[in-house]
Image (cartoon, rainbow over all chains, first blue to last red; front, side, top):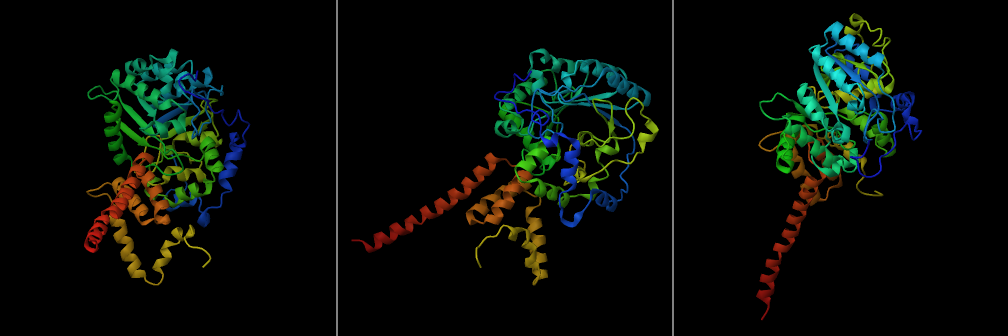
Length: 351
Length: 110
């Protein structure tokens, strides 16, 4: 399954029996950090006029189909990888589709792991499109290079799926350092295949968005300026075109948390997030409009809370839309990641 | 003084405002304006700052602008080229003085 990545894949935290594979251990690690001024996210949000931080509706249902992936990126907040087996059950997927239909949620956002590896991925896409949903697939690109998945670009185009693809940088060195040796070359091949079926091309309305995460312990660059650089360089170097670039701040969760701890940068990174707190970014945090579903049907305010085990009382099987609509969001210190600098979300910068 | 160049001095930079607050204020607002997006992008300005930091061999500036360059969208390849620009100017500056040397030698020689 991991044929496109050259060299040895690192095992997941879970496979290595690492303490940070436990969500409680992650929460404790973040909670005990001594940050200057002892500032809490709840206080910071309150000063920005959000006490408590509340949802304003469910505009996006983000479903995490599981932890299976053909890569083991060093920053992965899901601890996904080829050695993970957890995938969404039939009952949970059916409940997600029923929720979309019952509440006319405009957008289905599919993530993982590599969500395309789920046996019912294509069925989910087709049924959500039939309901009239806008469908986003969070794609690692290299999955489309696996023998049984090479027709994914055509499938995406046929069903007008918005492809949001991860690529940390427009050079091999930085990309392979984060995602595995050989990933950059395969990602460029995947982007060319997406371009070939119309993605990123003018006049096709097939949207190709690239997502960049910093390849280290620093904040992402300004999104608009970076998008100009990326469009110029990807076209010049590889003839690749795309529509948008999203910058996403790395969250101190799971394998990125491991990297921060192991490299002795955890405290400084958290301090950087706190220091860069932008009150204007609180308004647009994605948890206010997103409902996140875990592979096991548990509900969360976002995919990050999902990985930290900060679940909501109900599951997708017994979800009460009215209660979820205006719910108070579960917050902790990691939330500073979404409010630093220009703000960060699954839709990129938020200010 | 037991040693020079303590890393925490960078964090304490603002202490320079303590006995001259107005001058510090003027410096700070001018500094901020210098690095704002203008005819040059923030990324280009950060790369220039990184090159100058190396020409000045200021360890505080090198740490600060290495981070700033990354956060403004420059990468290691661009930053390495920027340092070469600084090195080339420093090297060239030494070398061009050689003409002065040659003139002097010419003057005092038979």
